[in-house]
Amino acid sequence: MFCPICGKESKGICKECYLKRNPTGIKNFKLTICKKCGKIFPEIGEEEENLKRIVLKNIFHGEMVKINDLKIDYSKDEKSEKFMNMKVVLFCEYRDEKFENEQDIIVKVINTPCKTCSRKSGHYCEVVLQLRGDREKIKETFNKIAQNFVSDVDELKEGLDVYLISRDYGTSSTKQFADDGAELKFTSKLWGMKDGQRIYRGYILVRFSDIKVNDMVKYRDKIYKVLKTGKFLIGENEAGKKKQFRMKNCEKI
Ligand SMILES: [Zn+2]
Ligand SMILES: [Zn+2]
Image (tube, rainbow, N blue to C red; front, side, top):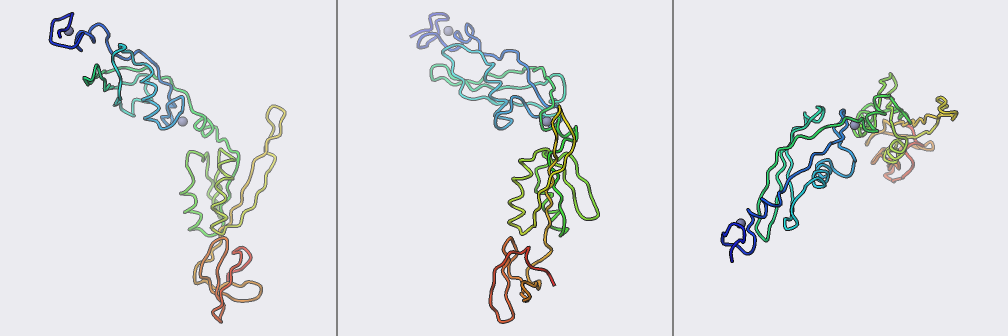
């Protein structure tokens, strides 16, 4: 069989002739990006996957061509510029014949701050985590907080005030503090008015105990040596008898 167009040996129209008549390429498109954190909109899934999906939507090709996959190379620094240069490799297939199509494209970038960044820059705060007590625990805990939820931090003599942009994030993180044996206290204060509505700011006081394994503690007038710390502490008395009680109910001696 020969290609009816060029006469080359081929089953039907050969790849070259088909592609000449039905080019594969990428349409012009724009990308909406948060200049601050580089997030690409709309935010669905991982960034690379997100970008792939957007590029994929803008590919044109002939009916007989299948796009199996694509690879995108770009410089992250260009995200904050007005235009972004991308190299896109399309992995295509035409009648069981695989081929690659490489394109250099220039994409217009539209900068829009994402919700997180615009809240952060406005020092937005829904809840304040007040970390108190054991210094080491405070430091450890602060390092575990997802920084994109933090709009401000105040270092105080008695601990750390962490301003969080999401009340949900704040409350969901407290379970782990309680499991660690911290004492929690929830309050809220009237913060201001917005559109005729009262705005409350939540405060979560987290007091970490400085009780450690091998410390001596007093619980209901009896002395125990600490074997395990946490929400429930396990202590051992002089006679070697073990007892479990809430860590917040005992005191270090
Ligand atoms: Zn041909
Ligand atoms: Zn952002």
